[in-house]
Amino acid sequence: MRIERVRTWVVRMPWDEGGDAVVTRGGSTLPGTDYFVRPENGCVYSRSLQSVLVKVETDQGLSGWGEAQAPVVPAATEAVVKDLLGPLVLGDDPRERRVIWTKMARSMATRGHGGGIVRDAMAAVDIACWDIAARAAGVPVATLLGGAFRRELAAYVSGVPGDDVALRVETVQRLIAEGFAHFKLTLGYGVDEDLAEVATLRSAAGPTAGIYADAHWRYTAEEAIRLGQGLARYGVGFLEAPVPSELERSQRRVAAHAGLPVALGEEYRSVHEFHRRLLAGAIGVAQPDVGRCGLTGASEIAALCERFGVPVAPHVGVGLGVYVAAALQLAAALPNFYLMECDPEPGLAFANRILREPLRLARGAYLLPAGPGLGVEVDESAVAGWCVA
Image (cartoon, rainbow, N blue to C red; front, side, top):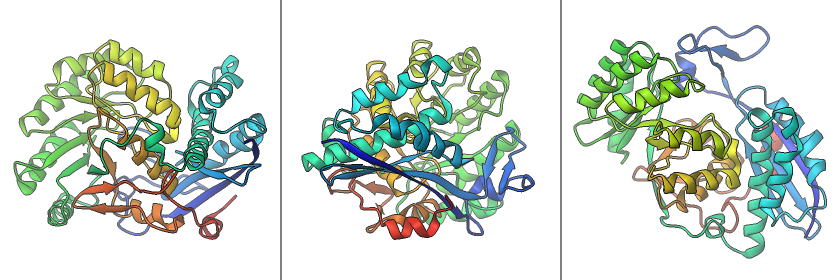
């Protein structure tokens, strides 16, 4: 079996009113774009769901789908696939995932591209190869990863939507009635404001609900430690991204003194970035992202975390059904699985727009799709309807 063609699509879906919590609390739009800078951390976000889809086709008629995490400037990620990685892997056997992964990684190593959009583009091609390999074997990707430990994946609602605390309380109470038991709050607005919101949500959700906090790289080590110690008093399960991602010494300090597990990893692409932080004791919960690490990289990271006794909660950001399905296949095969990140409204509804059969939630858990490969079938006509390049 040989790769015969690699196709790409850039997809854009504007968020509906009342959508993503970060969007509804975002700053002014940058001229000529639908991007905005979130004032609390200086990061750019989009007012639309944007992604890059990849389809790898073989000479035996089998094909597989992949997707990169590309929420901003997706055309740049697509160009890497279209102009570099696609031509690079033509003629290769897609079942030889490690060989292809290493070949792609080495192709730009001398230019320092061990992260960023090159790795995101690699992830999309890699996921498509796993999809093909599992379809060729007639099994789900989770089986190729070693087998599914679970077919229901407990999920936390990520970034509870609502324009103010009162609306977010209403959302949490409604989702609890629907069967959800875990909620991650979008914080980073100041330590005192963050703690006040958590206190309000804890009171509304009750003592048994799982509550988690994402500070979006907002704080100094001292502020993050104060925040963490306050969150611990409310039984918060982890504090995510408390300090800027490049400050490894600060990450170590926060992990040592915050009084609750620190969650890291959504922005890291390589096993080496995780290894340094695991050695330093900086990671309490690891969050690799298959749309940035690929299934090959993410499974290697998860195996390393297992050796350090660190649980894995796969990061699931903005993306479509291919990306989410890949994350579910990974999570099902993890002995050290913690929780699944989930955006049931509107993220999952948007993700399902390109699938013939939707990904499903039941009682606050994702159901692992049962078919071969990633377990989903992509509707190319639906993709074409949202395609911008």
